[in-house]
Length: 256
Length: 107
Image (cartoon, rainbow over all chains, first blue to last red; front, side):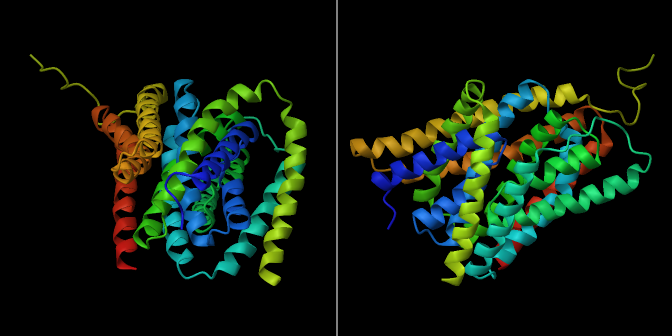
């Protein structure tokens, strides 16, 4: 049983704090860290961990977007247009998650962790802002890709930034800092939609989500201040190995 | 004599800067409100205050509502600025949100 206030709540706050800090420093949504920690360390069932993580993603998005909006970075019009398919994906993903066995979530999450690790190791392929000749084709692919990002977000409790940022930057030609901020703005709405199905199924546990969110809100606020003081490159490379280790550990849990 | 607004075009485009400046206020107040509610809900039980669960629920609900309120804000700006394309996008999002609630309840 999860206690409302106690040692477990304090540990959830710390987990959220680390996810918020690392998310802000490394440009991640936080879900990629929250879900494995809850499953592997706290032995929380996968569906409940995903639901709590989705609320954490909304917290990260809200906290970061407050700063990004002040600087006028997100492309609101583009973000909301892409959200049309992302929300459809999130609805499908969150409803489908109710029928997906726990082991399948472990395997899918491991694959996502490996993809994120590979993406971080290779570095971001940045393309300068430009307009495509065949903009219709690019927009169509972007809408389909956003739908896939929404589906991943709804099923696995992540923000889906690993897909959204390349879509905005490489496909639609938005500058990288605007792509990141637009993706962060979008993931709040996507995750909020994903939460609905989990809440109705009774998988959104308040005593777990609340301390986690509190930690994320504080961590995401402190992260940008800390980011200027530490060398993010080394932390990024170290985090790649952590992601690979967690992916192996999660896969091992399925086959063991 | 023409009344004000008669010569305005049927559709226009709301500037991005107008959208982001309004949204920054929505996000800032929403974030602060959720943070305060979470702190109250988690720390007050230490002093023996019982309705902590209701406060936590309100905090989570407020947090989940922020992205929805931000979309509604953009819709308001689009309506005010006669931006039909943006208004139709927001209308689509609201319809999808309603569909999400309906489908989740049908499960």
